[in-house]
Image 1 (tube, helix red, strand yellow):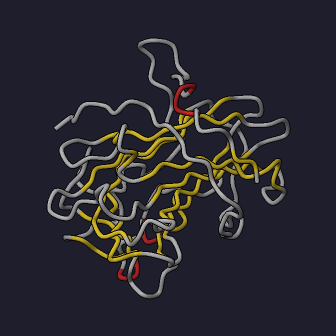
Image 2 (cartoon, rainbow, N blue to C red):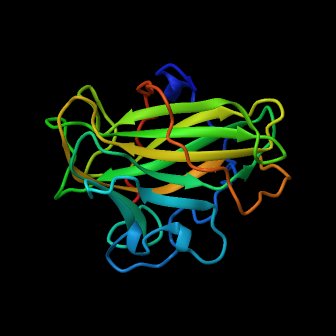
Length: 253
């Protein structure tokens, strides 16, 4: 696995000319399907895998069977639309992570792609610096035209939640964007993105709630058509380097 230095946020530049919006290659990027009422756990239908119509997501689930890390969809808060996903940590420490995985997305070799996700911490159940800090990890994989042969290593970027003492990213009073850029290598025809939520490492347990909305993969679309069977899920190996996110955007609400 290739783990890049922690300066990726400084180089995450816009891929489109000024005034032109880059195309988001994700469908159901704002997690509007399936429709839910209140906070709905992924194990009880609160997962995009149950969505009807266009949908790029294949998995939203927690690998932790103890319930210390739970994920799902909620209609109680959203950056855009009516829904977002949530990640709840309940004294989470030394347990398996939760993840959100995309299907294979057609891309073009040598092109750059901007991957992003907006987050906001719950006001009543905040994740704070005075406890163990969980972290968000973004894994990007590229595949050839056969949709099975991975090209190169898994590209990994990470972000502590809520951030560092000198630079908080995720806070309670506004949505903030976490993003990074990735370049498709020679021979790449497809791209897959997996967002992981891991418990703290050696800092104690984490307890709190955070929401995520408006995921995106921005860049030039490919021409190949992905199959209905994406590569199997596998937890990344090795240690990930801490990343520096882009400056937070203003709360649109």
